[in-house]
Length: 254
Image (cartoon, rainbow, N blue to C red):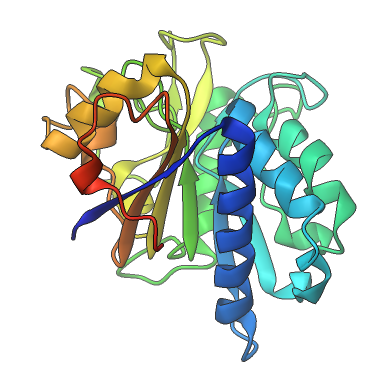
């Protein structure tokens, strides 16, 4: 599957572009009453995209009762902690659209009464409710992923055992190289079962990771290089992040 690179001049222009594509994709998916499972990401661009969706003129055209939201990873912190991806996503979009509460699938927080391992197990069990015996997790219509300067995606960090796990849907992560230290992450098989993987990255500090991903680096060393959707893998980037990529690889038609 080819990897597509879409470039916009600024982070805000990029967020607007992604929001537009996202709403078009969700509308196409749900038009005939089909369910759309979406995996969200945290970080500044994750929030910027959701904020752009919230103010988009077509946001009211979606039947949000057909959309289920998940997260590629979550920080194991208290429910009201500002570090929590779900809290950021709710503030940016989810609390502003008519999505049923049961369609929002959060990882258990550190003050939920579940341990870190139990939180990961509970998330895997929740995923399995929407999967099959062969694939105990849903196939996301769109899986958003941020990318770290080190090439990490979700909470799959370079040269750590979580990157290569294939026999679990969700994992507890301890001693994360990026704070906070405790997290829950989806595994590579779950991410790559997505129909579309959309990686959103901005800034010159992401240019190297983007270049390595497009060059086909070893995913154990550069996890983003192993991210791929079954139908599409799209890198949405700003000009700063694209500074080391040949313009021949850009596809502005997507």
